[in-house]
Image (tube, rainbow, N blue to C red; front, top):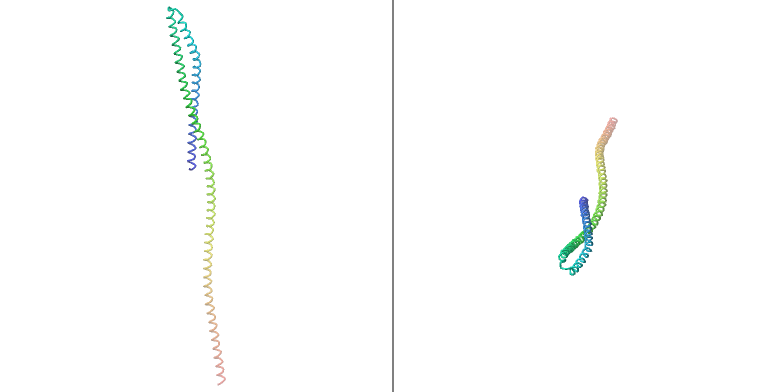
Length: 231
């Protein structure tokens, strides 16, 4: 994985963590509201229970009184009893409804708590993954820096070798020119030597011819002189 992919992955992880953080805050708000509703419901239940007990007691008292009063008073008492019974039933229904709502809220609160716990665990895992990605990125960066340094060193070595090669080529060309110059000079010297040899040989021959001629003339002169003496 290169640095670009690693940065993209880190960006996605940050966006995911931001979404999880936003969702976590929303769930906390909902949880707080549910707790408020639960507290209100429990308060209502706590307020209605004494009222219900009081109503039940009054009903019992009315039933007891109803058995003792005269028949002519039975009708008004029956009406009052019906009202009390209606109030009691309404109170009981209200309590049951609130208890049911409280149970539902508790269940929802439990689910939200579990979801919150799961989100927190996921967030911790994301933090660990993000930290691992950060460490991997730092390691990759360090490795890349070492590779760049090694590449720079190799480039320097290549440059030095190129300079050495260029110097060797220049030196080789210089040696070649010197050798060619020496060969040409040697050839010229050889030609000069050959000319001198030819000149020296011709001089020697001429000297020998002159000496031979002189010797012949001397012999002839001596012969002529001898002949003159004889005559």
